[in-house]
Amino acid sequence: MSENIKKLTDQYNNYIYPKPCENIEDEWLSKNMFKNNDPNYQWHKLWPEHPYSRDKMNILIAGCGSDEAAILAKCNPVHNFIGVDLSENSLNHQRKLIKKHSIKNLKLICDDFRNQKFQSKFNYIISSGVIHHLDEPSSALNFFNKNLTDQGVLFLMVYGNQLSESIKGLKDVFKKFKFSQNEESIESIKKITNKLHKKHPSKNFLNFFNDFSYDAGIVDIFLHSKEKFYSLSSLIKELKENNFIIKNFIDGKVASATKYMMDNPNLIKKYKELSPDDQLDIAQRLNWNDRIIEVICTKSHNKNYSRFYNKIDLDKIYTYSSQNIKYKFDKSSFEITNVYDGTKFKFNLNNNEIEWEKILSGQYKLKNLFSSFSNENKKNLYNLIEFMIDNYFLDFSFNKVENYKQYYG
Ligand SMILES: C[S@@+](CC[C@H](N)C(=O)[O-])C[C@H]1O[C@@H](n2cnc3c(N)ncnc32)[C@H](O)[C@@H]1O
Image 1 (cartoon, rainbow, N blue to C red):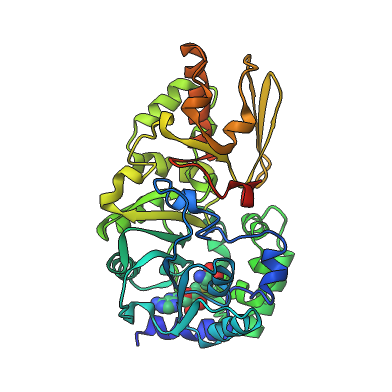
Image 2 (tube, rainbow, N blue to C red):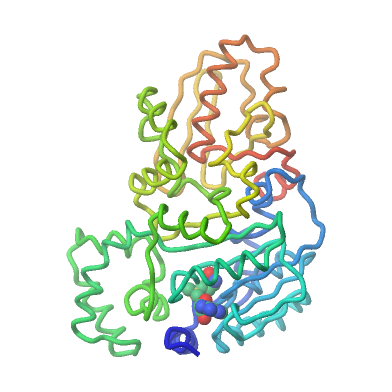
């Protein structure tokens, strides 16, 4: 066992992560909450090219932590799940959840997932907050490539390198004090950080996350034995070397950019003439809020299904409301509020034929909604829709959004 794996095993045995859910019914299902990588809830982002289906899939959760596999398996009883983790203690908590909720579709394995030889390939692999802790993240991507079906999808969550800069100074201080993964160091960290000036850059960081509210979270933020922070360019490069490309992101937190150039069509044009990789690099820097980059990847031969390497034909899509966006519209205006960060965008429109309910419902092909419009009106609306899609104010699929009512209604 490598030194890196030994340290990770010890850390996640001593501090199981995340702070685990105790009851999936109470904490998730009854609140209508779903994980961002839930295959049912996110179907149209994971596979916009495939009609919604509830056929059984094989799903691997590589580094499943204290509750992720149990929550996903409970919420998706039709699929077969395998969860692998280094930490026996984390898996023990998942075993409690399996027992409590009589979960039948989840197998747990305690090991480095890269040692596993599976009998068949997976339709969907999830690895959230894992590969950036490995000596060689590429070895995990290589393993995912070998174990994913041709049309399969990989959900990755990795840390970005912008927002995390704001705690780098503090981490250096804690290193000088030789703080380590123990109660005394954690207490000292809590005391010091609580006393920092409210404009200290790390306060900004800590206010974003609830990880600071529990010990395993504090260890994860300040005392991790190994972590890598990704620029999107370096992530794209590592993915490419392992036969993957980015297909989509879960939301616009990191990947949206033209919202910053809204009143300047020439600049938007310039931006769009850049390569997809350069566009994403700019988006990450402008958004900055990248501690968590949640990205949906596919094998490189599926370029046609990537929203970054293939222009979306608006005539072919169905559009539906986005997770974190609230919409307000009347005959002459359309307003969007990003619930996550409070930003608002308002568009004044002199066209009272627009049926926003239908545009937001996922039930209508865009082309059919605008068939009676003049060319000029259709062009203007398509520009607006493209802007909304580019900034994740509106989601799309090439198929009818069958599960819309269940989750977005
Ligand atoms: C930050 S936690 C994330 C847990 C979970 N994915 C989630 O998002 O809730 C990282 C987990 O990955 C596990 N892990 C890291 N490297 C691993 C490896 N090579 N094989 C199996 N598990 C690993 C750790 O033990 C830990 O439980």
